[in-house]
Image 1 (cartoon, rainbow, N blue to C red):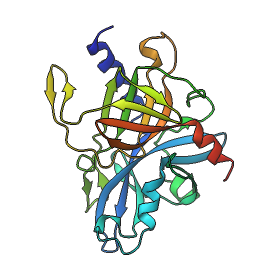
Image 2 (cartoon, helix red, strand yellow):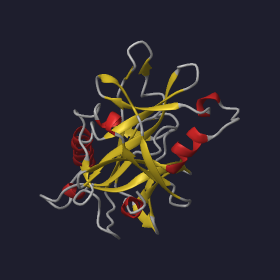
Image 3 (spheres, one colour):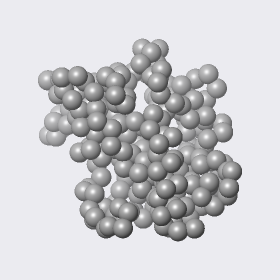
Image 4 (cartoon, rainbow, N blue to C red):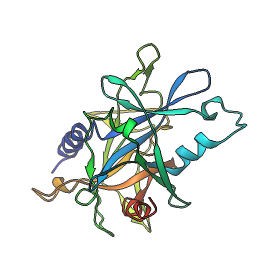
Length: 244
C-alpha cells in the first residue's frame, strides 16, 4: 500500500459521498448568499436528517453580531447542479464538547433532495469505539463553495483529504492537517484556511486495509485548530435521535 493508493481510495469515497456531504448556504436579510458550513445527509429508518456542527446552527441564531455573515440568515443546502434547497426542520443539539446537531428534515426540504443519497444510520456509522489510523475528511471551504446569486446554485468543490495518522481522543477523533502543506499528487501546496468544513464528514477508510469492508462515518467535523481536524464521534448522533 502506497500514498498514491491511499489518495485513490479517498477519491473513490469522495465520489460516493458527493451527494451526501453538502455545503450549507446562508442568505442574509439582503438576500446575499454565502457558503458557511457543511452537513451530512443521514437516514435512520424512514426518517431523514442532516447532521452538522452545533455551532453552525448557533451562529445562525445570534443577533447583534458584528460579522454580517452571522447575522440571522435563511439556510439552504447546496445541491450539485441544482438550485439551493431551503433547510427546514426540527433540531436537537449536543452541548460542548460534542458540538454536533441533528436536524430532522421537513417535507419541503425533502422534496428538493430526490437526487441526493442518505447514509444508512444503522449500517454506515462506525461502531462505538472503532478506530483506524486511515481516515478521510470531506467538507467545503467557504471559498471553494461559490454560490451563483442569479441561479441560486453553488459550485461544488469539496475538500477531500486522506491521512494515515488519525487517532481517537474520548468522543473526538483527531486527524493531522496542516493547510499550508497539503500533498496534491507529487506536489505540496497550501489549500488556504478552512472555515466552512465544520459539519463535514470524517470517514474511516476501512476498505484500504480490509478488502471488502465498508467505509463508514467516523464523526462530524467541528473544528480545525493547531494543524488538527477534530470530529465528534458519529454515535453521538444516535443519542440526539432520541430527543427528536
